[in-house]
Image 1 (cartoon, rainbow, N blue to C red):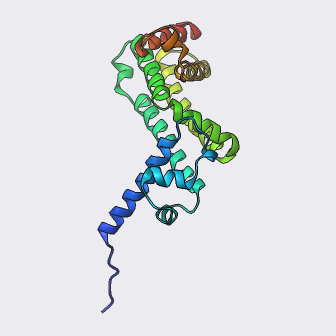
Image 2: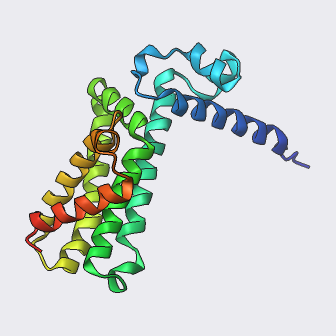
Image 3: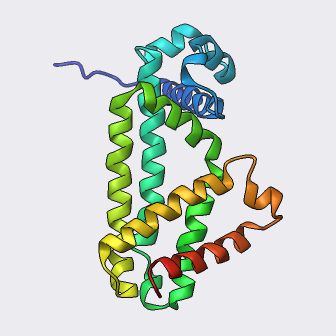
Length: 205
C-alpha cells in the first residue's frame, strides 16, 4: 500500500508566520530610507528571526523586495477598484464624487508617504520594479478615468490628465513636512475640498 506524504499543518503555519513577520519588518523599515542601506541582519532583527530562517524563505534580499513591492502595488490597485466599482456613481452628486476621489488620493498618499518615497527611490535602481509600477499606474488611471469621464461628461484624456495632476499634487501636499497641512493648518478634509475646486476648474465643470 502506497504511503501518503503527511503534511505538518502546524509547521506550515509557523513557516507562514515567519514569512509574514519578515515581510512586515521590511515594510516597516521602508520609512523613506533607501533599500540598499538595509541589511538582511537589520530585517532579521526587526522580525525576530534568524538569518537561516530568512534564507529558507527568501533566496536573496531582493527576492523579499519583490514581495514587498508587489504587495504595495496590490494595495494600490485594490483601493482604486473600490472607487472604480463603487455604487456612489449613481447615488452621489458631482461634488460628492469628486470629494470622495480626492479624499481617497490623500488617504493613500498620507498613509504610505514614507513607504512611497522609499519605493520611488528603489525604482531608480530597479527598472523592472519601475515598469511594474508604471503598469499599475496605468491600470489605476484607466479604471478611474473611464467612469469619471462618463459621470462628468468630459473627454477621458482630459480627465486622465486631471487625475494625474491631482495625484502628483497630493503627493507633494502630504509628503512630510506637509506644506498644506503644517504651514496652512488645513485638515485633510479641507485639503480635499480645495482639490475639488481645482479639479472642477481643470475640467471646466
